[in-house]
Image 1 (tube, rainbow, N blue to C red):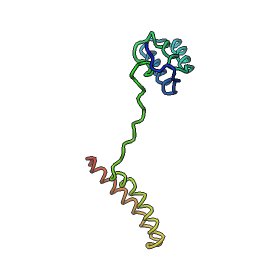
Image 2 (cartoon, rainbow, N blue to C red):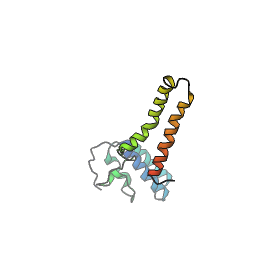
Image 3 (cartoon, rainbow, N blue to C red):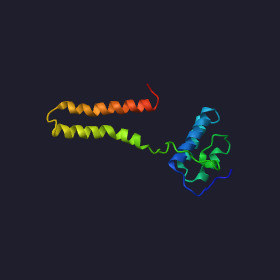
Image 4 (cartoon, rainbow, N blue to C red):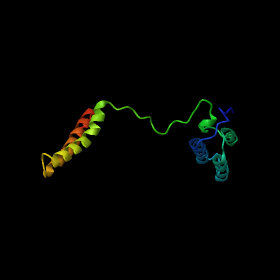
Length: 137
């Protein structure tokens, strides 16, 4: 089996992918626990991609992504998506209201504790607008 770029060192994620593939072969009965233990130790000690190839030559899919040409590990976390300005504004509304309430408390509305209800009211309004926008009742 041809291995792409065998000179590159393995990452921790690639070793984990190989261990996951071995675990699947144990689960399906292709490997017993002794073989799994031996191969797992070799995967943990593997430094290069070519070190993994002999451990999977007698096994069908699943194989680690580094041993399948053209297939790469998929990232486990999705890429962040840019938020529209309305979402950013709604997310910052409550902190802005809290700062405004503190300013009002110490200046215009001296000692009036009810100004601290302002952030709660803004949070409820923002939540209700978001729920309406997403079609929730």
